[in-house]
Length: 103
Image 1: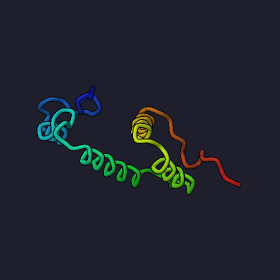
Image 2: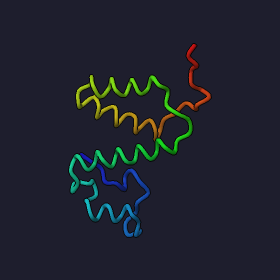
Image 3: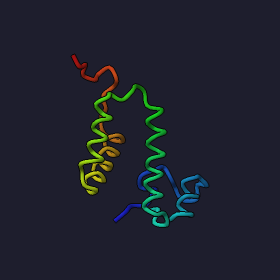
Image 4: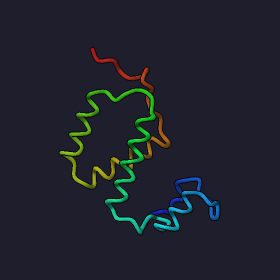
């Protein structure tokens, strides 16, 4: 079962925030949005966060992205999305300086 947006964000009841407005408009679990709309918001958020993150993507990661989208079944792609989101929020990430250098 889905958890309300307040479980994942700083939203608190009656705080007058954008999060409160979104919850009122689309429901506490965004149940009043279509799957397509939710995926669009994920894409928009990820693009903006990626643009603001330091460093750049290694060329091989573009290849990995293509392989994931062309080879994995839907449930595995959704699982990877969940895993990556969790790792971004709670895991450790390498800095640009920590990346292995290819010879």
